[in-house]
Length: 157
Image (cartoon, rainbow, N blue to C red):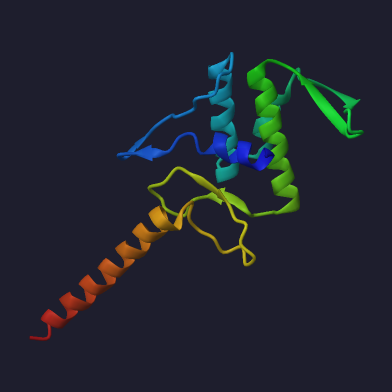
């Protein structure tokens, strides 16, 4: 659940017709805070900013433990809806980073703005989607390779 929330927020700025588009459609009171937090988290996951850049998103947030009806420990975050959601996303990011280092990363397609959580055994996934980004990049490489081979053969004549 938390991983899906993390990926949903990270992937809320896809490229549509070559334009980075904000598709964040959550019913949250403070959309500006949520968008600013999302942009910071994206920059941290890309490696453009250090993890400490997320600290301001946690300032002034309080969390209290309680026991649920089924006997589990639960933490209640006391903050605006946007800040509480960002705390959950940062918590999910931290959990993934600690338990599966290197598995959360940007898509290897430079024209893509999405992120992936590599769940493969070999940790070799490179694209957010094989059907879109992976296929496009493989097709481009094949086209360049066959075009290069064709041009080198015409020079032999």
